[in-house]
Structures are given as C-alpha cells and as structure tokens.
Amino acid sequence: MRASTRTQRSLWRWRRNPLRRPEDVLEGWVLLVAWVVIAAGGPVAGIVSSQGVTDALEQRRAERQAVTATVVGPATRSDGDSGATAGDQVFAAVHWTAPDGTRHSGRTWVDERAETGDHVVAWTDQQDRLVPRPPTRAQVEMDAVVTGAAASLAVAGATAAGYYGIHIGLDRRRRLAWEAEWRQVASHWGQAAN
Image 1 (cartoon, rainbow, N blue to C red):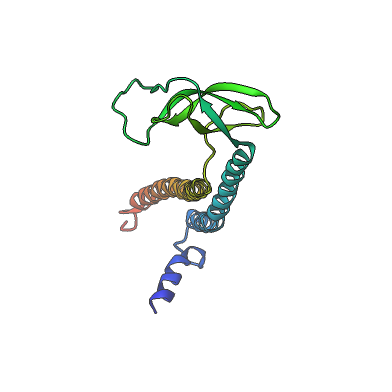
Image 2 (image 1 turned 30 degrees about the vertical axis):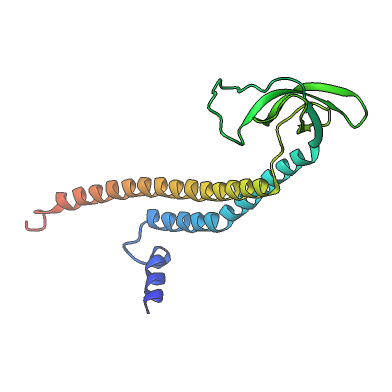
C-alpha cells in the first residue's frame, strides 16, 4: 500500500488536474530525465573513466622496464632532512647498461641504505631514460576504482544540482504566478457585494 501511494504521489505531475500548471509538468519531465541520467549516465561515466585510467596506467607499465643499476655516487636526500627512517628513498647517481649494450648514467631514487657499488633496480622508458617506478597492478586497480567512483558521483551530483536549479527557477515562476492571481482575485473582492 505504501509503495503504490508513493508512486501515485510522484506521478501527480502527469495526471489531469485543474490545479496543475505547465511548470509542474515541466518539472516532472526534468525530474524523470534527471533520474535516467543518474541511473544510466553515472555508471557509464564511471566505467568509461575507470577504463581510461586503467588503459593509461597499463600503457605506462608496459613502456617501463626494470634494469639493474650500480650506485656510483653518494645518496642524498632531496629535502635536506637527515632524520630518515628505514625504507626511505633517497636520490643517487647510478650507471646501467641498456638491453642494446650502451652504457647510461643518471640519478634515481634508491633505498637510503644503498652505498656506492650496490646494485639497485632502476626503471627506464623506451628511450633508456630513468623514470619513476610504474604503478603496481594493485595501484592501477585502486586508481581505476577511485576515478570511476568519482566520475559516477560527479555525474550524479551535477545532475542533481541541475535539477535543483531548475526546481528553484520553476518555484520562483509559480510564486510569481500565484501573486499575480491573488492580486487579480483581491481586485474583485468587494465588487461582488455591489
């Protein structure tokens, strides 16, 4: 009984009624469109943006390869902080040999305990330039989920805000129409008694 009552209340904008105004019908259609956009557009936006992030991060993972590099210089902290804890990363000069046999050098992030002569894992791009470590599979999945959820919520929020703005505008028009009708009725009061 309660569900059918709610349905009847929500469909009142389309029923024939002498008190129904054009603004009521327009608001009903706008509300219907808003619900369709939220129900269909939100998930589609989430899936598309999630897939886009996944594709971009997977491409980044594919373009980067791990190489074994040798630390050739002292490791330095980029922020000048000397109170490092185990597992912190520091910047150090390294040398490595590319798959084609050419030798390269550069600076990359290494574990703070790395010393000159230690072998570390460095990441290079297709031009054998040092690049940051690519995201792990778990990071890719987490970024995709967060981005998809954010896109879905953004579509829902923008649609709800649009509906609310239209609702406010239509309420303003209804108030102005009611005021005009009350002025018209008030001008006839007292005339009927004569």
